[in-house]
Amino acid sequence: MSRRIAALLLLLGLLCAACAGGTGEKEGRYSVYFLNAQGRGDDAALGWESRETPEGAGEVEGLMALLLGGPVSDELRSPFPQGTLLRGCGVTDGVASVDLSEAYEGLSGVGLTLADGCIVLTLCQLEGVESVYLTVEGHPRPFRDQVLSPRDFLLDNEIPAGVDPADPK
Image 1 (spheres, rainbow, N blue to C red):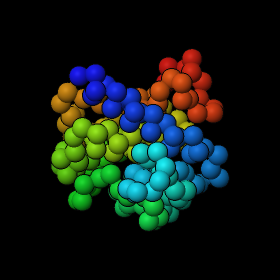
Image 2 (image 1 turned 120 degrees about the horizontal axis):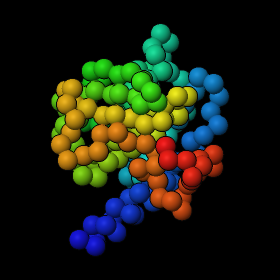
Image 3 (image 1 turned 30 degrees about the horizontal axis):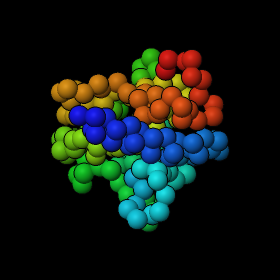
Image 4 (image 1 turned 90 degrees about the vertical axis):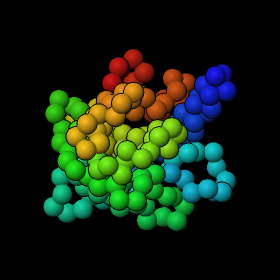
């Protein structure tokens, strides 16, 4: 069991490496998080590319469209199973609600953690979004916390600039 904990801590550390550079975007541009392509040579599990949301889409819907559409860069790859669709989304009281299609249900373990991390780290850049509530086909995933914040993917000693460690969000 201690090997699993060590592996999870290593994974979380790798996620942190991806978080440090995702701030400071110009208005209308966001860091959209994806998996680093294998064999890239760095230790970060996630990377990002700066993208603009599609015209005519709401911010959450637009960012989810970019996420589910996959990266432009060859150095990144999508964490989402083929056929994953956005069924609905919205923001209430600082929580972005995201309902995904059945294809997302096929993820588990580290793959699910990384996909969740891409969604949370991307959407929590939006002003007024502090956490994300994920469902599949309108139902919460069993045995999983459904409301996630960037803090769920960061180690305390790896807090990026601009994040207040005393703030519980």
